[in-house]
Length: 226
Image 1 (cartoon, rainbow, N blue to C red):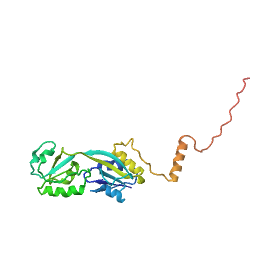
Image 2 (image 1 turned 180 degrees about the vertical axis):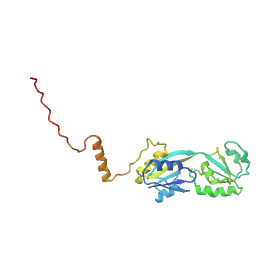
Image 3 (image 1 turned 90 degrees about the vertical axis):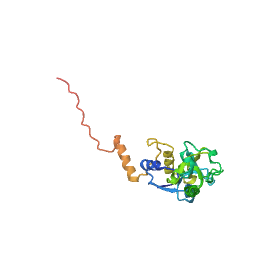
Image 4 (image 1 turned 90 degrees about the horizontal axis):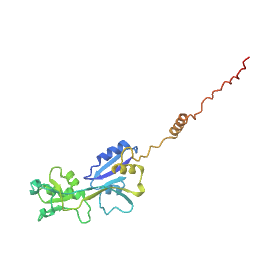
């Protein structure tokens, strides 16, 4: 059984389905959380789908970046930007209250974004964060658009080096686009009896099985014509 934690705002459902259909690792348990890396560090998860950067990631972890998220901005439904088309620019926010934005460290605190959006829903200020995160958390309470005044965010799979496994490698491969035909899979272990039966079947298929040896009838000697 593989346990994977995924951070709020990511949607890895298609990978879950492919992993369950293509592999034989005893199933997949998932944890939807604001702190996927925290679940990994605590031992509750074997693998985490999380945002980068994160100061808690050290040389003890493997990190595989998968994709990047566009920055977004959330604002009240009756805000003047509601009618705007295209990405919102930084100069359009002059004098505006920013309840939360990605800090210089680049780390995204999903729980803090969630709290800040409650303030926006009360018609106060804006929030700048990865747009997929805003899309999930807004729940039609606020509007959101692409924001041109910030950098995008990386999303990656992270796991402990000393806990690497075939199940983790298979999931990473699927997330990176490996197909069913090329998917690296660890076959389930067979019992000793199953191995013996398989060996016998191969031997018989190649004609090497033990069977009766038919006796050849003695050949007749040619007779001379008289």
